[in-house]
Amino acid sequence: MNAPVSPAPISASAAAPGWTPEIAAAVGGLAADPQHPTGLPAPFYTDESMLLLERQTVLASGWTALAFGADVPKSGDLFPVDLAGLPLLLVRGRDRELRVFHNVCRHRGMKLVAEPGHAGRVIKCPYHAWCYRLDGALSATPNVGGPGVHECAGFDPGDFGLMPVRSGVWHDTVFVNLDGTAPPLDEALAPLKARWAAFEDAPLFTEVGFGFGFELATNWKLPIENYLESYHLPTIHPGLNRFSRLEDHYNIAGPGGIAGQGSTVCRPPMDEQGRRLPTLAGLPEEWLEKAEYIAVFPNVMFGVHRDHLYSVIATPVAPGRTTERARIYCYSPDGLADELRPLRETTTEVWRGIFAEDVIAVEGMQAGRHSAAFDGGALTPVMDAATRHYHVWLARGLTGALTGR
Ligand code: FES
Ligand SMILES: [Fe+2]
Image (cartoon, rainbow, N blue to C red; front, side):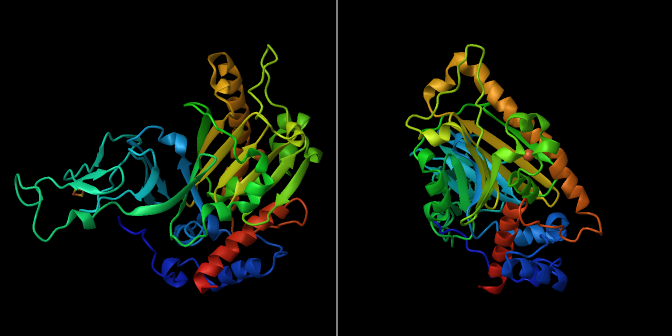
């Protein structure tokens, strides 16, 4: 088996022409001072070279969310994801293990899998038909030694398996650590696992259609930043604000790479017969009336409620383009019963609607970052505390990777 690919040392000047002295000073200010008044400068949202720099730093050095286990439910299922242009491939093995590989053929570098699908027993390259087992081993090299000769001297297939990417799963969200240096996923998630201990062992059940997605004309960080604050509730979500008001919310900023908000009001959808999706068995009473919405940095948003959990991944496509994908889970197979389908549809529509309301905000902030007048904005002490926590985390990730600190 090949070792995970380690990136070359990072040189900001080589990697990112946009990394000017002014940008370095702004990011350095954020990294050094958690009370720094402004946020990340505009090029972090608009400049291709800065996205590539992020791909080598804040998207590579920790645990970045990639997809859902539910994307590959059966052995042989394949799910390709391009992460800021880096082609990756999720595979469910014959042993049911979920693996992530670089989505590139070891022969001539063809992108191996273009669309989600099912491989059967092997993954076949569309170019010269080299075949890889589901565990990544190269298993067939047709005609490699000439017509009808499938071996060749001096070429050992054992050296040319798919390149693995370190991965881990929490609440069905698949995370990758691209540079292979992060602490174990459990350790990285420890603060949130402790906070949400009541949900840690929750069994999760989902189905096709229990979720939603958006293609957004915005940078990948803005959906996360927007998720961290309840400040916009009265303006962007007037319907939601009628029963879960601004004053019902509290900020969460850390510890570690998490931030978000909680609401002391949780009103799960109810159908005409008064039924809800099943409440998580054994859930402590305090969770019957509240819900929390926390982003795990850099790019995934979780929400926990008494009757369902969701995960929403923001995948960078280009500086101003992001794919947002959500999966919703209930806690019992009974929640997937046919007679509760309307409740699942209502739950899905509630969240799809709220995230749709946010599109105007996240795309509007992106448009504003093309203004010469945008200087990083103002991170105010109370309502933007969680956003500031995210920016400081990003700035430390950027500068740490660039300076080796
Ligand atoms: S590039 Fe894949 S088999 Fe040649
Ligand atoms: Fe919102």
